[in-house]
Image (cartoon, rainbow, N blue to C red; front, side):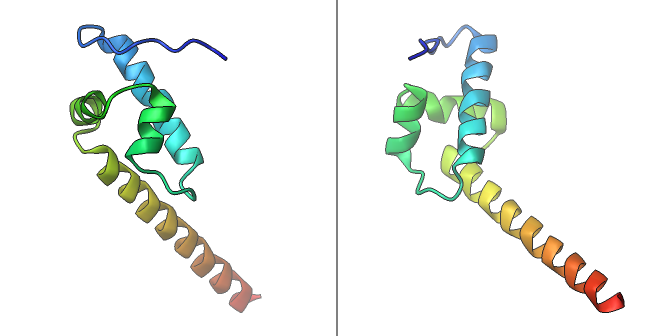
Length: 91
């Protein structure tokens, strides 16, 4: 298993990389039940560290970020279905 960088409140570049990696994981697992337990386990960061990183770099909380991604994903799927239906109706 690859060793992950540790959270350092003064190392913004490393912290941003940790957050980016976690956000990629979140995006890949939106269909799963993602809660605090999963976020802490995946990131090796504490609840407080996660709150800090999301607030600092995403201007939101982790749970709000996940809800927003899910909503956006559903909107995209719905929009694609509408486009497909419109294209099918014209052919």
